[in-house]
Image (cartoon, rainbow, N blue to C red):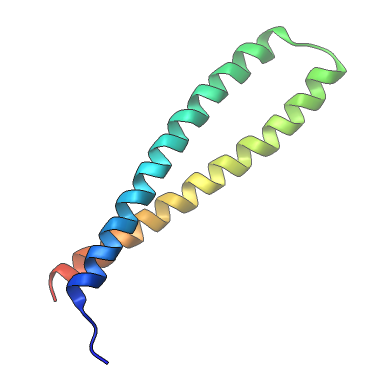
Length: 87
């Protein structure tokens, strides 16, 4: 069975573009949310604030890991597309 390189490249380009848009939106939304959290943290005190901070720290770490992995994926997709352009 023959592989249609043009269709494969086109599909990878679409996947790359979609992934990049998703990450750009996510990074922007996460930055806005982080700013709100820091404004709240400056005013919020006590045991509830400590519990919320612990939850926020876990959530923040998860988002940062997700974004990093997504950036690695988009980089790999871009490299594959570039290689297919030379076939």
